[in-house]
Length: 81
Image (cartoon, rainbow, N blue to C red):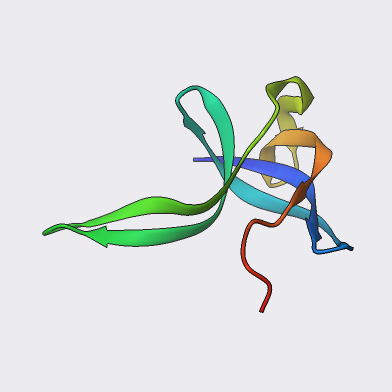
């Protein structure tokens, strides 16, 4: 699975630089912040909280523990608690 380094915001605060799982859904690069397990006789992980990225701001390479870097900040899609 790919990993993407990006700046994360939550509400009006910048959390900092983080690394998040990244998959492609219908050829769109998509960050996955939360996975759920679907149980239909077998356990299948499914993306729950996701953000689709603009591919023009996504760069492939070696960025520490990530193989992609995203230029723009990303708002956390999970509900604030």
